[in-house]
Length: 282
Image 1 (cartoon, rainbow, N blue to C red):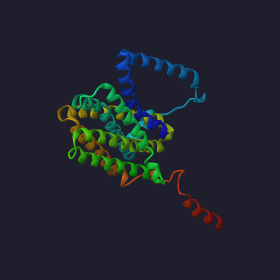
Image 2: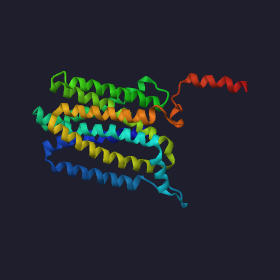
Image 3: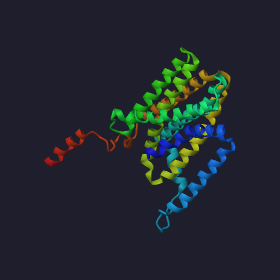
């Protein structure tokens, strides 16, 4: 599940980089031709490789009841909204960075393409930060990842007003993107844990909320960037990250449900050894 969530935000970060290179060397029509070929390939793979997994039995389920259950669960909706805001923050950065680079600093579209590729690389490297802390549960992983994202957001807000804008833009965007993906992935994974029986419905609800949120916050970030430039974009990102962390800790972190407190398969071996004598004594 984690790998599926990881590659979802990487697409919007890598696509502009490849699209910029193709537009520079082969013209803007080349992007549409490439997309058509990719979609045809996916269609062929889907037809040939995906098989029916549902048994030949009639399944009766009231989708409306399941959807209502998800929407009424405060903990699940807190995770979905927090992950949506963090994902929207990545989208705000990717959408408005080209404007800052090309308009404020006068760089070419190729520079923007390589810069966006670097952002995607920093996000991938950021996913390696949290596991080094060896957390015992996904809840601890989420708390560590959110704390790192909030720390880096605060640091970039200070840097944006204390250093030259050209340097601070490059430094801050890499730092922000590299620390935003881990909490987004962990929160989305944790939200899917208790709803495995209707994960597709959970994904649909989360997708609708994420799509609406990304569109709204992207427009907001674009308007602020147009008026205040790179520093305004950094402060927008800072505000979104702080808001996402406050929503998570207010609606989930200080009173998590029972399923979130259970240790995952990477629990320390010492805990397992402590349980062995008790079983032997029985």
